[in-house]
Image 1 (cartoon, rainbow, N blue to C red):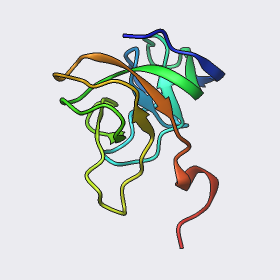
Image 2: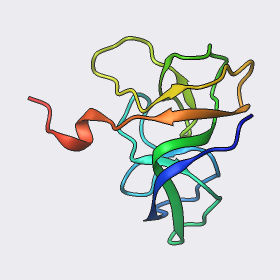
Image 3: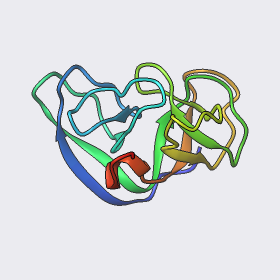
Image 4: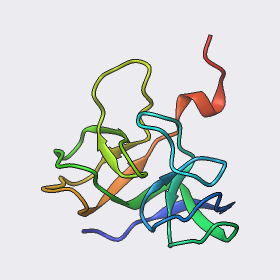
Length: 122
């Protein structure tokens, strides 16, 4: 695993208990599968705690399943990332910079803005 290079890290107040290296939304919770994410947590957090979240650059993320290098990723369950399934209603949140060979592996990903964070769906 390569070290991550975050170019922007923001603080989010945890809306629930959070684990390191998982996708979160602006409410400080894990998004629904395929949902919008603002970034990847840099540490564990208890409800109400401020936690750093990488929102631009690269980040270390936890895989929810095996996936190849250089594929778009979406949120699976509990903020873990999985390969995007191609459904247009689901949001890509990152691109894999290395392969994950199993669930729960930590991998470096390139963060991409969730399109729904910038514009409302028609």
